[in-house]
Image 1 (cartoon, rainbow, N blue to C red):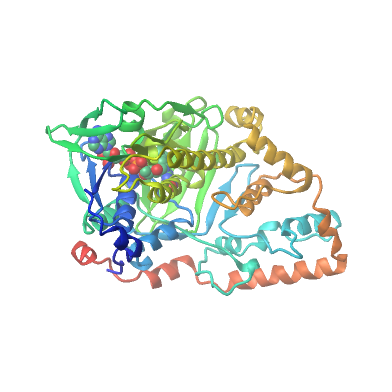
Image 2 (cartoon, protein in one colour):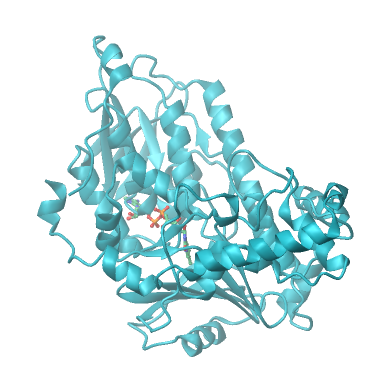
Length: 528
Ligand SMILES: Cc1cc2nc3c(=O)[nH]c(=O)nc-3n(C[C@H](O)[C@H](O)[C@H](O)COP(=O)(O)OP(=O)(O)OC[C@H]3O[C@@H](n4cnc5c(N)ncnc54)[C@H](O)[C@@H]3O)c2cc1C
């Protein structure tokens, strides 16, 4: 299969002359978090300097959901050296250009695309020209028609972005895939690269007397596994960081009140969208994720506003094809651990926190944490954890969690679904100060904060703000410099350029068939 060897180790080779016992890294949990971590660590860390062990329990199983991603996952695949078509065949993957939000504001839909609206003119953001054109009676087309990604979504079309495109045609893409096939794929990939997999249930965690570091784990079988660094990927139970090291949980359910989800796959339907769909309902929202072999569906809801039975019936009533099995109920709380890395233990995935999958952010948070961890991990020589690096890791993780939290809250608080208790509540509650500031900025002049690193980008904020019917009181006065006639002509030219670009794309179904057409290779062929 088309996977590369571990990265050529220039720096590794230098350090390699010094003989130290390898650093023993023990990962607890074999869901997406555990296997993503094992795969990346096996790719980046030299096998003679770091020994990787992963413990998972078939009796406990995994959460088994997590099928929509963000474009950053392509960087992760590149780090592993995966062949994209192969990866998509193995995981029954499809392409994703964004998320369609239905009925979040008033009946209707908008799309949050992975791409830009318009282009910068004279260094000024496009939305200001568009707002000015509206105010001055030029009747520009809706903002979404200036996004190639949105127009492609509206046509169920997909093509790969060309590296030579100008900003107006710029867009990115992500994937939908089968979560169980993904974990299985990474498991085989990692084991083939030297990760030791142990099947068993951890029943005890021992700390050393001196610093309170985790020293070893005991399995139900009695086997004891010692380590130097422990990665908690044990899911919602947070066995090491939460249970043993007693890192408290910060609860965010005052802003994100959904606490349950029903999940059920159904047969694949004709509507093969290159985007995830999220449809608002009385007590929450429903996701729809098209895969090659089936469609994933789920209803995220709050038990404060709708019963489990009612939510289950709402989900089953919304399927666009026959259900493949009984719906599964998942319970959760929005929030995060107060500290994601403590002493010699770091948590990833559900063990570190949970934000509902409205913007498909969990696998991204895992990926980002893995990349940061690989940068900051102790070396076999130093062994001990450097507290300065731990602080930096936790700072960066906190900032990302908070930005994503604010972005999710925006979807709720900017609704106009009057008369429904959940939606009335979230429209009126007190916002975190960080979000309050962003909304004031937008309202005053149509600006949104720009982040160099992390999520979400300016265009993402614009998609949701305008998509949910918010309109700023004023635009940037720099956009007034363009003469009115020229503004009109430019808008028309850009509009037809974007339409032509999206109009030339093949259908999503056609492209997937062409790109992933070959039958999946066998497990043996993959790991050879
Ligand atoms: C309803 C819902 C929908 C979601 N949708 C998306 C989405 O669209 N996109 C996205 O990015 N994310 C999504 N997520 C989040 C995503 O599913 C998770 O972030 C991802 O699957 C990682 O899970 P995990 O590996 O942390 O935990 P799990 O999958 O729960 O894995 C935990 C592992 O720990 C092991 N374990 C636990 N206890 C022990 C023990 N005592 N001994 C040994 N092993 C043990 C288990 O066996 C298992 O292998 C969703 C989550 C939910 C709840």
